[in-house]
Length: 392
Image: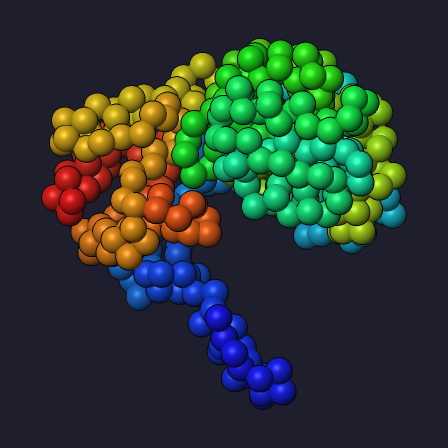
């Protein structure tokens, strides 16, 4: 920990603070990447890389119909909304997207947000306050952790996907305390999922409200891409959160649930009330992307084939895989420095595969986060499997 005096000049103070927070293996850095077709990107210095680092699981960010919808909305509405939703920033295309999401999720009402992070920051403080109990899976996203802190509720963490441990945690405190259970539909670093029916049943038994952030499941899992909760109704999952920046290839997010839930968010969700509304072009892009999910042999079918092909090719190379049937295919490495070295070795072979290390993942659980896409083909997957086997 730095002992730099509080009165030091700003650059000295900042440098000391930077040294404190830089993780083992070196600092994180942004990199300029340009898509050049399919799953390929080009670096600023012209080096081509096969991209296994994105969340555009269905390849819809560059789909002609999605791009055209965004372009038409730009012509009609301009570049931005110009105000928050409660001032003058709510457009017809926002309403159309909300109505389609209601049909898609089977929920009666919906609200849009500029990002998934903002949606999560809105929900938990709106639902609970001091005196309430928030039970959260240990591996939930940082945005949900921040939202829990803002809520000022009592927060307890249950072991990852451990419903028996959750049941014990739900017994904490006096009878009548408001209880909320928070989980992800697909965990962003593990690629695994809770048993939603069992989780919903447990919440019902303990009179707890279930909140599911299905950022990485929506558009990929379930009938027509409805996500991990597609088989459950709104009484079992009263609060459903999803994003447009993953499978839908756009940006922004939504919260779906009862009309009362959405009315509550309109009254007290600070990231809805005090933030410029989602740009209309992004709403139009998300609306067009939803149409693509219904195609029987569309991008969801291609992605499913790629996931199966990757697991088969990796096993043929003797690679140890975690149990994930989603586009997120983590490869455990343990040590931060080792994960960074392996990521760099793959990069030298033309593959972009990011290293995940603490605090993003727990200590001793560093990994490569392999993200599969409908844009990959079998040759791409074989190249990754062979390179990973050669480097480990």
